[in-house]
Length: 292
Image (cartoon, rainbow, N blue to C red):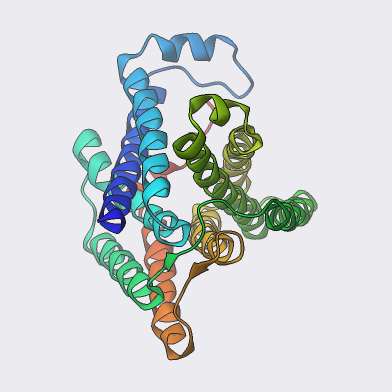
């Protein structure tokens, strides 16, 4: 029953994130854009009911993700967020009155099938509720080191695919780490109450790393084509989440020949993402607007 709840809440979180993307992108199209920073922008958006609805969807997504992680394994919950992009396309098509071409539908089918095959083959489960602090410190050190290396490579490259992919992969590491810290923090709430949650280092850790993830993702979108950053984000988030699930939370995954269908599932997800981000409608929906 807990696994079913975890999947359900994860899907609701993915839908909520997708709704937030569409609503906030729709609201952003209604205000003037500029090449530089404009302090008045936030005030203008706050007066837009559509943007506020999008912010509400972000809050709902965070709550659903916390509930999903409370009930299920990190290596089960986080890969389900691959479906956020297809959900955004369905919602965006309705809101923006756009249709996804046949190759787009084929790409969505490939992503859904790949995710299903991969999770079926991996069969994630088990694990501990509260990881050991020593294990957390090693995982944090490894993730921070990986992000720093990727960012260093990115800033030394000109705008293009490599720069965008490095920023996208660094954002993926941060998103996976945010989910792991959030899972641990929700267990603190569940076992020790709200007061312990707001004094736990994991709570402030996932807030800080989450902000870093958003910042790196924005840089990825600004640094090069979506076809470079989105697959790196999609596969990187799922892969790092699986690694953290196994190493930090001691979750169980199938091994042996099951690795073959897992690899097949990952390839289908990446292939679907590569095709989707080449569809003009998708670039309009998820990529930042050019200043004018």
